[in-house]
Length: 184
Image (cartoon, rainbow, N blue to C red; front, side, top):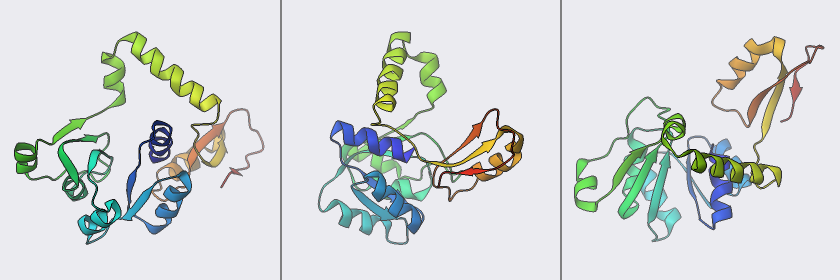
């Protein structure tokens, strides 16, 4: 998902600050075009502040939850927003209530299926058309780590659960040789 967010931000002229959990992910994010990359560690807030060079964030998009969200929130400008669209850590974003009250920050949840259920049909069609056009012209793409024949679905699902993947795991329908095709 980060690759898509970076690509869409670039197209919109928006700079990104990207927090990663592993050093190997940092290089990958840089290759995608991430403007600033910070490795999550004990000094996360300090590292974020250094990366921002005195600037403030307007928006935080989060998939992890837990304490890193609170560290990112410290770098949000007053009235800024946090959008959580997954909770990979299993922990709700940890933030002091004062951040919401005194700085006017807002926390929003986003789940795609809820948007699809509630958005006007014309809006959904328009967004999907724009995204389709970006895929068609090559502006939006995703790396593929492995392509598996359908009969190796167990291996494919096992691979898809690894946190250190470098791309998507896909199925090739109709493959009969049982070979794994690597795109990495």
